[in-house]
Image (cartoon, rainbow over all chains, first blue to last red; front, side, top):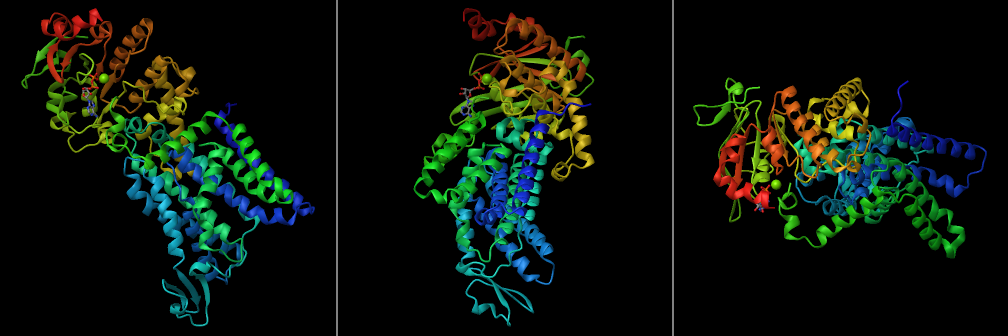
Length: 359
Length: 277
Ligand SMILES: Nc1ncnc2c1ncn2[C@@H]1O[C@H](COP(=O)(O)OP(=O)(O)O)[C@@H](O)[C@H]1O
Ligand SMILES: [Mg+2]
């Protein structure tokens, strides 16, 4: 029998962990042991797991800092709402699947638009551009009005009146967000999406393309010297990451009766980045654990009131110690380096050949 | 193997055994300026199909810069490079590698978080064809690619007896092994010209002796040309058939090891100082 490799074993453990957690939650909820507040968090936990895993693809695997992951989530969320609400005759699961798929595609397109100009450049410009992207998407959505009636979809950038709806419904109402969403998301759907995101990410990492992506992260000049097309693989990782975030966004939106554009702001992007950094750069299982624990925790601690933030802080430190591996440390260095870059952009680091003087 | 040099019409020297084959590399008037500094100038060199060439000279002479010019890390300020008879002026680093030049780095540049085997597989990147979707969906093409790449990677690693290290993290290897891995990774790209930048740096004498044997073995089995930068004169004089000496960016001498060792200008500029230091 062939010996299974360390990575294969590690991946199997990750899948087993996710499946076990799902089965346990299902049993607990059937037997009535799940509190209402936790039940309400099951879908968001799945969403944040997907968000963290997908961001880890950009930050941990590709080694580029992204500060606007919530922007892609937002594109997926509002696209998903429009899709699901404009095909009301179809069965619920079909609407949800279409919402997630098209939400992912639209986020992917946004990823291409952001990625193509930025990832061709040599410097670390992605952080600042994704930061801007997140803000731009938020402001754009504050000014988008979408409605549907018997004639089809209507768009406007002005107000609901100019949609000229013929007895239809408003799907997106500018700063008021999407007002009348049907809750189509379920824990099962969330679980399936987690498995999909996990499979896509883990399979990509352990393939020819994934190796090329990690080669760029580890040593860009060496990667070029063995014939790897830097822009292509950077774009591949970044756009895949955006698609997965868009899919998560659609699942997220379809879990509520209404959502606002401002839900997907800088804070959300940073929250997801915290999951990634705490779970460990490039450590997919770590992202899953960090996203789960840190999503449940604030709710779970509500009863403790005064001590809530104290315990939250202690847990943060514990998570950091538990996952305190070299990867995590590299992660912090990366974040710090990239942040330092656009705080004080020195001529050496800005110059094209700056880093390659001594080869 | 015969190592007699014969003059060819273009004024260059080629080994007798390479004379019927077109040269791997020809540079004409190659040069680069960094601002006011002329780092390399009038660099003319012809390398035969299966030749082992040494590039020596004092620190700062411009040796690494020559490698960076050939691999298009830097775009030349002037001159021409013919690689396998084709001009490389419009090419970038990636295209030059695809066209046949692979290299190692003076400051080791491995994919240090990845395994030894993965480092070699990354070198095999362009000999594989599975796209992103084959990988994500685990299509047959992915598995076939992986099988072939795995076997090939181990085969290449066996040149340096490194098969046992295949699953080790590249960054955790001892210095000498890292240098050897860089050579294997470069070889994996199936080059016709292999550039080695100080391959013996940091190696002990027995490792260096082994390296010499292996460089020769690589040339013999793959029938490729090798150009190496090295300060270890035992290695250079031991395996190089032709040597070019660089000083202040200019070639001050070209010839066989004996000719170079007895060239007063070379002794003055480099070899003499080497002995003192
Ligand atoms: N990117 C660069 N910018 C400015 N000067 C450079 C650059 N790369 C190399 N040089 C200069 O070119 C000269 C040759 O350097 P190098 O090729 O590294 O020498 P060596 O022969 O030791 O390998 C040195 O004076 C070095 O400072
Ligand atoms: Mg050098």
